[in-house]
Length: 82
Image (cartoon, rainbow, N blue to C red; front, side, top):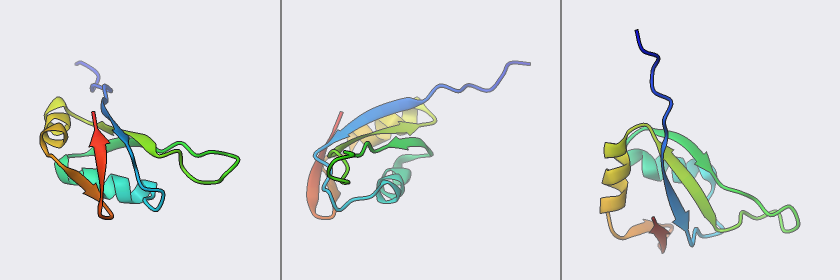
């Protein structure tokens, strides 16, 4: 019996508004599928996140679903998804 796949299908999100938190990103991208990971790096000096993140899905189809939607709006601001 084969082990379950641990591959994560990631996309990169830039221009994330400083008011958006990790849980909001997970919730937003959850509409496209199961979010396996959400990495939102913070700047230690300012205490704010750095304006970009990586979101990982459990399947390639979920990733494709997220990439096909355009535009992506979070708190009224358009974010760039690659």
